Image (cartoon, rainbow, N blue to C red; front, side, top):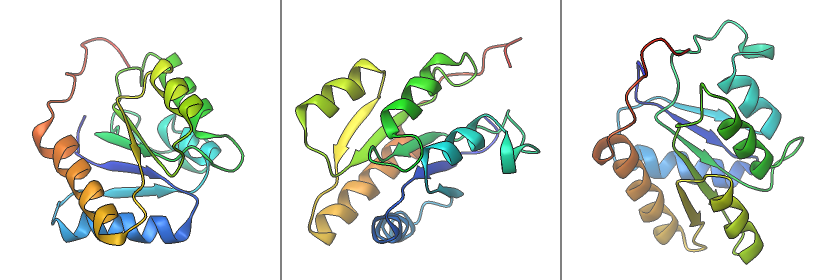
Length: 150
Protein backbone atom coordinates (compact mmCIF):
# COMPACT_ATOMS: atom_id res chain seq x y z
CA UNK A 1 0.00 0.00 0.00
CA UNK A 2 1.48 3.27 -1.05
CA UNK A 3 -1.07 5.63 0.50
CA UNK A 4 -3.49 5.49 3.37
CA UNK A 5 -6.71 6.28 1.57
CA UNK A 6 -10.36 5.46 2.05
CA UNK A 7 -12.65 4.14 -0.66
CA UNK A 8 -16.20 5.26 0.14
CA UNK A 9 -18.84 3.30 -1.78
CA UNK A 10 -22.05 5.27 -1.23
CA UNK A 11 -24.95 6.04 -3.57
CA UNK A 12 -26.88 8.36 -1.25
CA UNK A 13 -25.64 11.97 -1.72
CA UNK A 14 -26.73 12.97 1.79
CA UNK A 15 -24.88 10.06 3.44
CA UNK A 16 -21.85 10.77 1.24
CA UNK A 17 -21.80 14.41 2.36
CA UNK A 18 -22.23 13.46 6.03
CA UNK A 19 -19.47 10.85 5.83
CA UNK A 20 -17.05 13.25 4.14
CA UNK A 21 -17.88 15.98 6.64
CA UNK A 22 -17.28 13.62 9.58
CA UNK A 23 -13.94 12.42 8.17
CA UNK A 24 -12.82 15.98 7.46
CA UNK A 25 -13.93 17.12 10.91
CA UNK A 26 -11.60 14.64 12.60
CA UNK A 27 -8.76 16.02 10.46
CA UNK A 28 -7.56 12.83 8.86
CA UNK A 29 -5.14 13.97 6.15
CA UNK A 30 -5.96 11.13 3.81
CA UNK A 31 -7.41 10.89 0.34
CA UNK A 32 -11.03 9.82 0.17
CA UNK A 33 -12.16 8.33 -3.11
CA UNK A 34 -15.93 8.25 -3.60
CA UNK A 35 -17.69 5.88 -5.97
CA UNK A 36 -21.46 5.71 -6.22
CA UNK A 37 -22.35 2.16 -7.23
CA UNK A 38 -21.03 -1.37 -6.94
CA UNK A 39 -19.80 -1.60 -10.53
CA UNK A 40 -17.77 1.60 -10.14
CA UNK A 41 -16.30 0.28 -6.87
CA UNK A 42 -15.09 -2.89 -8.60
CA UNK A 43 -13.78 -0.90 -11.58
CA UNK A 44 -11.80 1.29 -9.18
CA UNK A 45 -10.41 -1.60 -7.14
CA UNK A 46 -9.46 -3.68 -10.18
CA UNK A 47 -8.29 -0.75 -12.37
CA UNK A 48 -10.74 -1.25 -15.21
CA UNK A 49 -13.25 0.88 -17.10
CA UNK A 50 -12.71 4.58 -16.41
CA UNK A 51 -10.03 3.59 -13.84
CA UNK A 52 -8.04 1.44 -16.29
CA UNK A 53 -4.90 3.58 -15.89
CA UNK A 54 -4.97 3.51 -12.08
CA UNK A 55 -2.05 1.87 -10.30
CA UNK A 56 -3.35 -1.42 -8.83
CA UNK A 57 -0.57 -1.29 -6.24
CA UNK A 58 -2.18 1.80 -4.71
CA UNK A 59 -5.00 0.08 -2.86
CA UNK A 60 -7.08 1.89 -0.25
CA UNK A 61 -6.40 1.27 3.41
CA UNK A 62 -10.07 0.55 3.99
CA UNK A 63 -13.30 0.34 2.02
CA UNK A 64 -16.45 1.82 3.59
CA UNK A 65 -19.14 -0.13 1.76
CA UNK A 66 -22.87 0.52 1.65
CA UNK A 67 -25.04 -2.52 0.96
CA UNK A 68 -27.96 -1.16 -1.03
CA UNK A 69 -26.16 0.00 -4.17
CA UNK A 70 -27.20 0.38 -7.80
CA UNK A 71 -25.85 -1.96 -10.50
CA UNK A 72 -24.07 -4.39 -8.12
CA UNK A 73 -25.09 -4.59 -4.46
CA UNK A 74 -22.62 -4.31 -1.62
CA UNK A 75 -22.63 -7.99 -0.72
CA UNK A 76 -21.65 -8.94 -4.28
CA UNK A 77 -18.91 -6.27 -4.23
CA UNK A 78 -17.61 -7.80 -0.99
CA UNK A 79 -17.75 -11.31 -2.48
CA UNK A 80 -15.69 -10.18 -5.49
CA UNK A 81 -13.17 -8.38 -3.27
CA UNK A 82 -12.65 -11.55 -1.20
CA UNK A 83 -12.50 -13.80 -4.29
CA UNK A 84 -9.53 -11.97 -5.80
CA UNK A 85 -6.04 -12.64 -4.45
CA UNK A 86 -5.06 -8.98 -4.94
CA UNK A 87 -7.82 -7.67 -2.64
CA UNK A 88 -8.57 -10.64 -0.40
CA UNK A 89 -6.98 -9.00 2.68
CA UNK A 90 -8.28 -5.48 2.00
CA UNK A 91 -10.21 -4.29 5.08
CA UNK A 92 -13.90 -3.77 4.28
CA UNK A 93 -16.30 -2.09 6.68
CA UNK A 94 -19.96 -2.36 5.83
CA UNK A 95 -21.46 1.04 6.62
CA UNK A 96 -25.18 0.79 6.01
CA UNK A 97 -28.62 1.71 7.30
CA UNK A 98 -29.68 -1.95 7.22
CA UNK A 99 -30.10 -3.66 10.56
CA UNK A 100 -31.50 -6.79 8.95
CA UNK A 101 -30.02 -9.87 10.59
CA UNK A 102 -29.72 -11.58 7.20
CA UNK A 103 -27.51 -8.71 5.93
CA UNK A 104 -25.32 -8.78 9.04
CA UNK A 105 -24.80 -12.54 8.80
CA UNK A 106 -24.18 -12.42 5.04
CA UNK A 107 -21.68 -9.57 5.45
CA UNK A 108 -19.63 -11.44 8.01
CA UNK A 109 -19.86 -14.73 6.12
CA UNK A 110 -18.46 -12.99 3.05
CA UNK A 111 -15.54 -11.64 5.07
CA UNK A 112 -16.49 -8.14 6.21
CA UNK A 113 -14.09 -6.84 8.84
CA UNK A 114 -16.82 -4.86 10.53
CA UNK A 115 -20.53 -4.08 10.20
CA UNK A 116 -21.62 -0.60 11.28
CA UNK A 117 -25.21 0.56 11.14
CA UNK A 118 -25.48 4.24 10.19
CA UNK A 119 -26.87 6.14 13.16
CA UNK A 120 -29.84 8.40 12.39
CA UNK A 121 -28.76 11.43 14.44
CA UNK A 122 -26.01 13.48 12.77
CA UNK A 123 -23.90 13.75 15.91
CA UNK A 124 -23.98 9.96 16.37
CA UNK A 125 -23.30 9.42 12.66
CA UNK A 126 -20.39 11.86 12.77
CA UNK A 127 -18.87 10.20 15.84
CA UNK A 128 -19.23 6.70 14.36
CA UNK A 129 -17.57 7.69 11.06
CA UNK A 130 -14.81 9.62 12.85
CA UNK A 131 -14.10 6.62 15.05
CA UNK A 132 -13.99 4.35 11.99
CA UNK A 133 -11.58 6.68 10.20
CA UNK A 134 -9.25 6.98 13.17
CA UNK A 135 -9.26 3.25 13.83
CA UNK A 136 -8.64 2.06 10.25
CA UNK A 137 -6.20 4.81 9.26
CA UNK A 138 -4.27 5.36 12.48
CA UNK A 139 -4.71 2.52 14.98
CA UNK A 140 -5.09 -0.57 12.81
CA UNK A 141 -1.98 -2.19 11.34
CA UNK A 142 -2.77 -3.18 7.73
CA UNK A 143 -1.58 -6.49 6.35
CA UNK A 144 1.89 -6.25 4.80
CA UNK A 145 2.20 -6.52 1.06
CA UNK A 146 3.19 -10.04 0.17
CA UNK A 147 6.35 -10.21 -1.91
CA UNK A 148 5.87 -11.54 -5.39
CA UNK A 149 2.08 -11.11 -5.40
CA UNK A 150 0.31 -8.57 -7.53
